[in-house]
Image 1: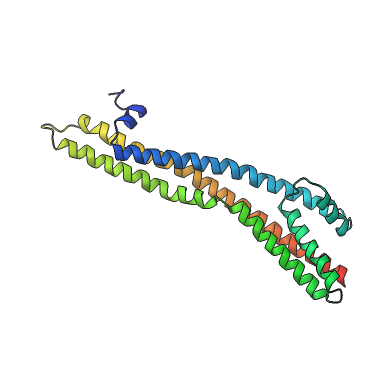
Image 2: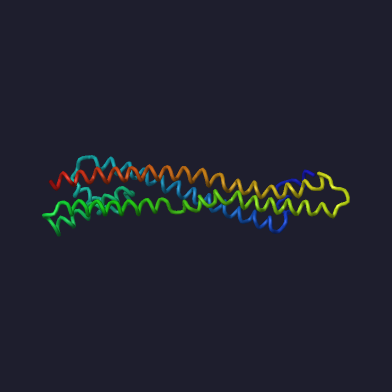
Length: 223
């Protein structure tokens, strides 16, 4: 009985459809962990780069000089630096073309920064939909495999003269493995999705705050 109820034997003895469900859930789990590790490093790098740029931005150096330094340096300075460069480039371009229209300078700069901020948030949120889908769908896919396996187990009892728990237990255990694999795929995906969504929301708030603060600085310079 112990050999019959080992995980490997239960998977090997499951019906073809249940094995297909398990294989699908295994691929979903591998994909989820791949996204989790990739987003973990990406969001962490974005947060560290944002903090580093904020410290550099508030050192009271000239904004044009800072923009030129960022342009000349070839390393990635993070999402907030790219937002700053987009806003500063639009501000300088508009000031050169329409020097007597301060409102146009500020509006153009703000629009450029908001567009850059949205691009950064979209990049950070990429693949999160897969985690959300994996977390919500995997338990139901596993449950489908379990229901199908239990149906086969009870259908096999109809051909037996004496129905006992020992006869039906292996089939039910094999079916329940599908639900276990579904939960194994779903739980990390749900936890990671909630954590990443929270981190990205905090970064988005920091981007919005920076856009307002930088716009106020430009407004004072224009006046």
